[in-house]
Image (cartoon, rainbow, N blue to C red; front, side, top):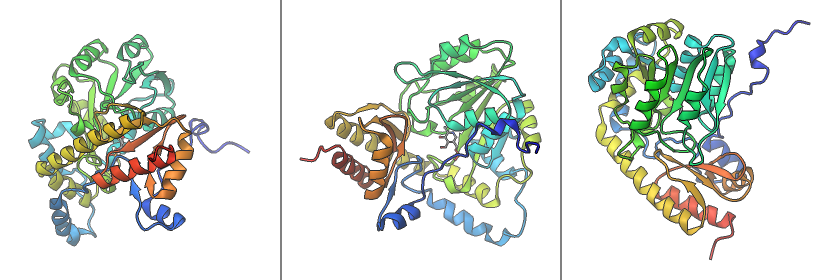
Length: 363
Ligand SMILES: Cc1ncc(COP(=O)(O)O)c(C=O)c1O
């Protein structure tokens, strides 16, 4: 019988999301479960979002605005980038998919760091691209020099995540500028800023848009799932040259962003006070967790994001299961490492208490 599935799918597995809170509650008979596994916003989202959604209720039967006119206008007002250089997507996940479909031909080499967001690798492989994987530096940051060394005439695209998920490390403005200057203009740099709002280091490139004027090969990709707390709506966007946006638009499904997601995003972008509160909570939680991990003598990577990579010196899958039974969901990583999202004070405290129990550190 002939093979019906594409060859590229043979070595791929479906993305494994963490278990939803309700499933864990039911499985272990728990009243309260905290989820510190997917880097969501523990404060929820701006209250302005709910008001905006009520206004959309009358239009449930109508297709969304396929051009996302008002949302693009809002992003344009905030970024001072013209609307024809902005493209909203159904989550940044979809944008990663659109980028892969737009640029990667079978056999093209695609440079990806080890230990970064998994969807870069999966979408590259789906398109028949050849991933060229660069290990992280000793300090867990992206090895940009090694990435540059791997560029050849087959290279098509480079995925960059800043701050990086899952390590929380960053590329500074100076390093980034130096890097993009050395990447030939016919190689696309897909630059993922999913966690940019959380970066506190003064050298973080908060104004990455400045790079676009000299480097039209960069695609800046953002999401409203993290700091803006809109993960359930699936809303992200890209900023790039007019030509890139036009081509991304060719592969985009016609009505990819729902009416509700568009309205939620406009309201959320309008509430910068909520973002400030989110950042404050993150910074406080980060300091608390650092202090507690230090006391527990655990190695962690200082983070520029809303998640921390910690080595808990025990099998991470085992700890993950045991913590889940206690009512806390974290993300197990390779070996003895876990990734924890920074939560509300009570969530962080519960995490610390459970970790102490698991590691026999209770006094
Ligand atoms: C680095 C990175 N990029 C993209 C995404 C996808 O985000 P979205 O929820 O907008 O699809 C995530 C989600 O965790 C992420 O960590």
